[in-house]
Length: 55
Length: 405
Image (tube, rainbow over all chains, first blue to last red; front, side):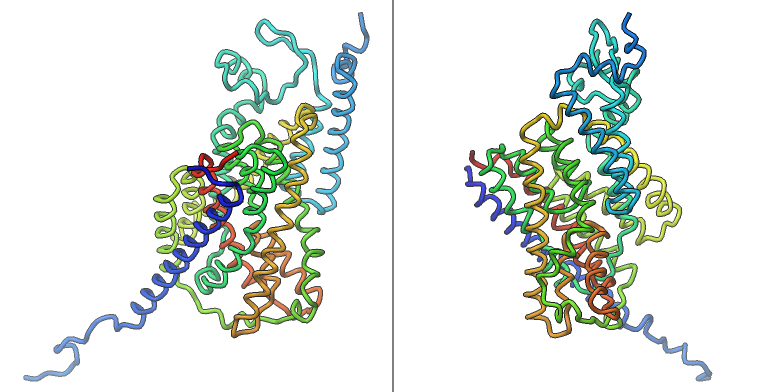
């Protein structure tokens, strides 16, 4: 298959645009994941960690 | 005995054709002009000063020399035409002092990769990650020259591989043009790369004039950089690895370039300071020095006597002007759709000459409003432009066989 130079250039632009959108999504996903990790509590409190004694 | 034979640079004028003599003198004068403009900081001194010295060296310092069984007029710098003759190449490697640099770092694209590693290590991707939509949107518009110059160049009679190589000048990324033209049009990589670097040097002076088509009230727009969210080092590191993996899968032919850039970037984001110091200092500047000097030494008179070079000069201007215009159009459109105050000069920054175009955008903004601090934002589209140019380079190299004509 051979394309006219202008069509080829348009195709190249289209491919680049699609990949640029993919890169944008990669950024969004990474940012979202990192934010969620930060928002989540580091460790759920354990029963025995509250201090004091039940004895 | 001819007394002039003591002074071989002058003596060889008597052996040359008149047009060669004029060409040599012209290139020596051009070399001096480049050096002067570098000294005056009009051109990018890091590249253009060594390039100017190299040009003077090979056009003034010609001599009669014996290589093997041949006697020829040549220089002691580099001979790019011997790569296919192994015996002769071995001889030149021992005679011409820049021949090892050319043979081992130019003809395989290594020098471009080394420069890219260094660029990766000094590139700030915070804004790209904080404002990915804006950065990539502007970057795509600023590729207008890279896209439209290809059919224009073919319309002017260039072959598809030559047209694709010169079109990459629109991406405004020196190492990318060098790598792309080496892959696609090896015979023309010297003039194409020189055209690219000369014009990139001139961008700093030329784009402010182009930016004046944006109404002054828009150029004055202040942007609040305090609203930029902070991006964690982990997110930046993950972005490097994920994007590199994606691009490597898509364009193996341009992977050396991607690998070099993202290696530098990943090292920076991982905080390996010893490597960062090495990549951003000795490696980047060492490679840039030898890149400029060897390019200058490759600019012999035979280059300008080639009629294709005139077309390349015209096409280089077209490519960079169209990319600048595309960036401005992108900036104006984004201003319309953006909810926050937006300065369309950021479109100029998206023409990806890191960090020159970002500095140009800031310079234009500050000329009309001293408080318009847009440089922190400008780095986003600037780095986005590097990524989009790399993608288009990959598409061009991989897809050349699909172009008719």
